[in-house]
Image (cartoon, rainbow, N blue to C red; front, side, top):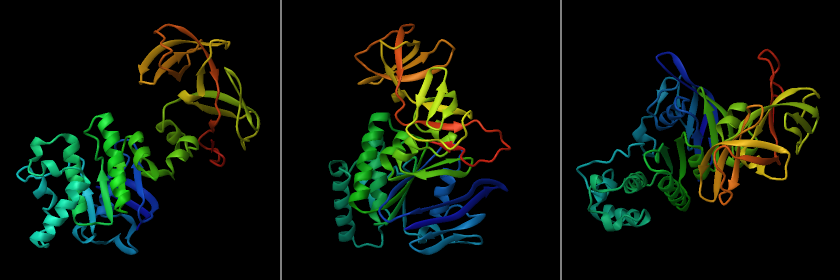
Amino acid sequence: MLELDEVSCQYDGTPVVRGLSLRVRRGQVICLLGPSGCGKTTVLRAIAGFQELSGGRIHLRGQAVSEIGRTVTPEHRGIGMVFQDYALFPHLNVLDNITFGLQKQTRAQRRDTAEELLHMVDLHPIAGRFPHELSGGQQQRVALARALAAKPDLILLDEPFSSLDGDLRERLGQEVKAILKQQEITAVMVTHDQHEAFGMGDMVGVMNHGQLLQWDTPFNLYHDPAERFVADFIGQGRFIDAILDTPDSLRTEFGIIQADRAFLWPPGTRVELLLRPDDILHDEAASLRGRICKKAFKGAETLYTISMPDGTELLSLFPSHLDFSLGDDVGLRIAADHVVAFSRREPEESPEHDAAG
């Protein structure tokens, strides 16, 4: 459906996207994930035809639509778009917003399309309301229905849930994905929210400084990050210093940690070991002790920040019925079933075998 081949973009001579390549199969929902300013929205604009390329090419449905010196205009790409601010027409009601781009259809065709979409996004009872009378979630669904009205086979979503609160964001994300899958529509979404990307994306690309660092499934991004930035950006956790003792064990200030695989570095290599909250378990019988310095109630679990005797801070998720107070001393056990570590190499050294996880 969509192929980006070594795509580069720049603004006023400054590179913002560099040599990005990816392929999206028909019916896939994919996400570009990264911090603000990483270039992900520029990639979306390039796919839509709003941004010229400074290098590479973009193919849509097997046809070149963007290359240096040639850009097929957005209206000739057959792409639907859902913008961050929804871009609804304030003077049109829900029904007219949805059918706005269908002037070439007959009145009966527009009515049939609107009926189908209103039921699909559960807006039929409020078809006569205007945007200012709608909640954020309802506006988001109107924007989606309008994008679907022209029956595109590719939809681009630019931070579509960013203005919604967490619970609504997650619920609508699942609703939107279900609609896209039901209609067999390919979608490309950009977001800075990893939970949103993991919930929506069949595949997720992590970007930073205009480059695609890893293109993978959400599971592999979390458990097998290819670079330190990806490991740090995905999920929560803390890096601690360690030394490779044997190919499958690491010596840390908290004792020997057995790895679930053999690393390729020579014994004695200094590494950074990632410990995530699910690697640190509460165990009052353990000799390893720490002091609770922060806590965040999450419902079924509480996320504790625990200060160790040497000043290192670790994160741990305890069942919420274990309710500790700030300053409490707790016992901990490290159970890192899937070890993620990165060598502390100097910049001039070879990057080969830089990461393992």
